[in-house]
Length: 622
Image (cartoon, rainbow, N blue to C red; front, side, top):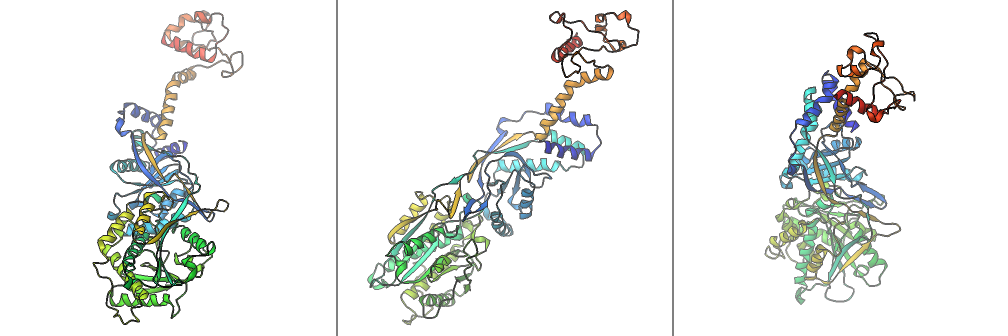
């Protein structure tokens, strides 16, 4: 309150030289004559989604606070300290966000538009670039996101008008806005966040067993299902990695039909793995590999792995990149798959620009770049297929990655391309003389409507790892879908180590925020000053005309005291008959006289402070 008082008074005094009494009294007068607020407009309730808070390998990320109870300001206000800073997405920038943090803002609330599809593409790209920067630094300032509605927009506009008035050039305008403007106290309903213990990350695996001997080569197809963004409850991950899961499920459907018939039952094992915790350094894949390679004697991963194909962000653009940690050697199956991708893209989908991207694994970094690196670390041949050329692209971890960003035709085309290349490797079609421009799967076999329905299901719910419960409907539906086409479908659970946890999640990610309509806090201070000034003005008048005499205890504030009479010319007429020995007082001189007491004060040598004030009020009223 004191900071706000200084802010407003400084602006007023800079703008004008009005008398201080006018500055103090005007807000109180305006408050008394202002109409009361309608009860329906006094408060508004809306849902807010908190920024990420998690620990990874002992390193904290995101906001560390979840409690909010402070007054609202917009990002353009001069003073943001201990204020809830409201900012619309269109006005948001990393520089403004940093300014709010430097001023120790009480909280930051970013207001998102109702539909992301209406947001300009340059704004979306800019925010995608900002999100990793926001999460890279730890902050104690609560950061929330809210979806715009009419009431919230009205709150923002009123707060913006009040904030703008602080910089007005006219002191009268500053006073007027200070006295009449409606402020908003923003209060969250939740409590301080705490770590969630024993949270499980769940993955699901299934297989199609090849026809032939026991030592058949195995092709592993992997995609992580979880999404990631600056706010978990807004992370729908359409392209990253809903598109990858959609392609994995469609490949499971297609090859299950081929493996149903003996003539098309290939001599390859196909292992499908929908991994969890992909956005948290691929924790689900890491533990799955440990369990299959270190803690069991019978696993398809231990025998003869031909290659591992990871699918990540394949729903946009006219490019496809095969990311590898080590270029495949000629004569290997992974090299054959690379050549088949190039052949199918060139002859059947010439609009697709295909390339291989080689990047060595950097074990010094906290996060692996792509999921195939988890397999490469365990010396399994693996690569990731994506339309993104760099793992640092902001599209992989953004709340802007919504359903509208996935192009259905592109997703269908890429699914056909991947299915064609896999089929040509599995059935050795190139060696058998099959023309490269002859498709195996027709458009009727890979239907866009089927992929659309899967994408719609994936993007109707947030899929952040902190929100996907092992007993929730998402995992049960995913497991049921895979069970329709694969054998030995089973979940695989990962729990963080209690002594040295690889990951720690926190709660209070979704809360209800209340915006209470209030007068600015500065007005409480001004009103208190007005009341004090009004109550003390009679005393001030008499002190200016007379004087106080110390009582027996020596100090007016130290104990009882007696009154000193005013000059006789200034005495009210009603008091003159009460003055004893008035004839002994020269006219115009000051006289020290003890005033008579009411009956209950008879015989008292002196009066207490409270009794004296009450007595004075009685004499004045008489």
